[in-house]
Length: 326
Image 1: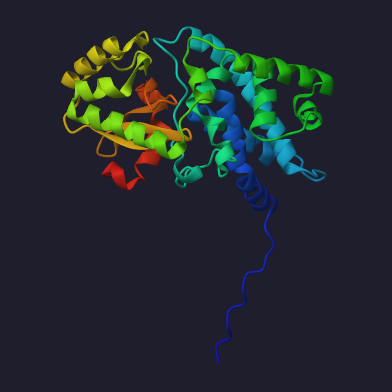
Image 2: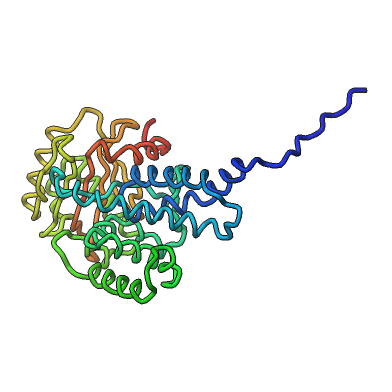
C-alpha cells in the first residue's frame, strides 16, 4: 500500500514572510505614493524601492510594519518631489497628473490607489485635487495627503516626517488654505460637481457629440469659459497652451477631428474617481481625459493626457476593459 504524501508543512522562510507582509500593504503604499507624486509610474518605482529597503531591513523588533513602510514611502516621495519640481518647470506644454482608471473604486486588478472604496474618498485622486496639490511644498503635500486621504492624526504624521506635532498642524493649515484658493488652473471646479449619476450623463452627451463631429451639439454642452488642456509633453502633437473659451475650443476640436487616427474611438470610463474619456484604437490608448462639469451640467474643463510616457499604467488597465476591444 502506497502511503499518502505528507503535506509540506515547512514554515515560511523569512524572505517569504516578508514578501507576504509587504504585499498586504502594497495597495495602500501605492495610493500614498500616487497622491504624493501625481504619477503612477513613479509611484510604482517608489513602492519597489520601498520593498528593497523592506527586504533588507532588520525586522526582528518591528511592531508596526505598516507605519514603517508608510514612513519609508513618504520619505522616498519627498526626495522625488524635490527633483520633480525642476523637471516640471522645463516641461513642454501644460503638465497634468498621470491618469489612473478607477472603475468600481479599484483598479481592475492592478495595484490599487488605497482607500477608494468609500464614495466620500473618491475625489482623493481626482485630477483637480492632484493639480491643487501641485501648489504645495513637498512637506505640505505630505502632511495634507496623510491627513486628508489616510486619516492619520497629527501625532502620527509628526512621527512619519520626523517633525514636531505643532509644526505638522501648521503645515496642514497652510496646505488646506492654499488648496482652497481660487486659481487659473480650473482645479477649483471639483468643489461644485454635479450629482455622480448626472455627471456621467453629461460626459456621455459630450462624447456623443464629439463622435459625430456635431459642433452644434458640442456648443450646447460646453460652458462659455470652457478650457481644454492638452498634455503631450513634446512627444505628440498637442496644444502647447490651454485653449480657452467655447468658440476657440470648438475650432480646436474641429481641427483635431480632421487629424484623428483611423479607427480611433472615445469610450467613457472612470478616470481618477470621476467620469472621463479614453481615446483609443482597439486596446491601444492614445489619450485619457478627465472632464470637469459644473453644477449646470456644462463642461468647464477637459484635461487630456496624450504624452505616451504617462499612458503606460492606464493602458494596462484599459486592456482589461470589455470596451477596449482588446
